[in-house]
Image (tube, rainbow, N blue to C red; front, side, top):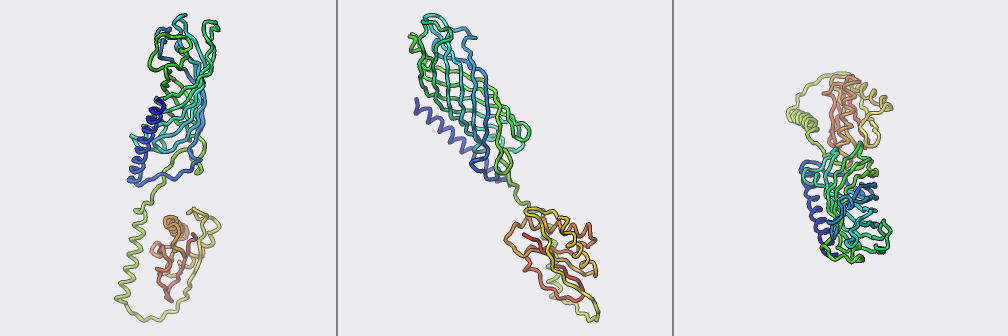
Length: 380
């Protein structure tokens, strides 16, 4: 029986792991993938309690209400994937048996510890969502228990139940509801535990007729606290992929300007005009905080100098670029757009004067003596 229980548990665990891999494949196809997690992430601790209903052996002869007992305990678990979680559950229960010779029910103590796998049916069949509050899971577990105690009637006809140890299998269902911010969860579960028929101590009581198995069904409600992860969340989170469509218009504009430059090189319009123009070339840097695209107040003087240099002649130009090309492209482009928007909205620089170029090496040296040129570099 021990081998059968272990094989059943491992088979269910392997099947659910395969389902979990399938879920992540779907998420990747949708352009999303889950952020990496550490071993210390997605842990929770909780309490639960309720009642049990004993079955097996001679309990069919007992009064219905005499087959009920109380149970409660602690649980410690970890979500190993969106498809399920692993849990240790320790329970105390006041269990019930029935003594045929006296036609009386008796009670005895039980302490159990089980290792449970909780496949999340909601995520498996409907996909994982970060904001989902209610989920429905299965419960598959194996564990061991210790029973002991004298029946509560304390009559000498009932022999003392000395400590006996048993292996058991557990199956059931669990409903979980996440409260605000995923910090606290409410849950309810209905499970059934299967034991050898000697579990209720009836072997000591000379019960003449025995069933193949015995056990009890548990109905419990629980409350769990979910610890904070290394990224500040309390659950799995998606990493949003780069939406290249946001930058297509920018790239099109860059390509258009490059094409105009190439065309002018092929067919130059040569005019000789003698013009005395006071032109300037400005080299400056706009600094941003780490991982941020917000222009701080300390950069306002820099923005003023750029605008002043760009608003002298109609053909003045501002190149926005960076010195390194190994950094975060998306972050650079968002910062460059922030600088462009600041110059247009707050400093009256014409949009046609601003060119964003990811690689500074691609900006051709402009030795024109008829316009001001500003080279603006974004920090990495």
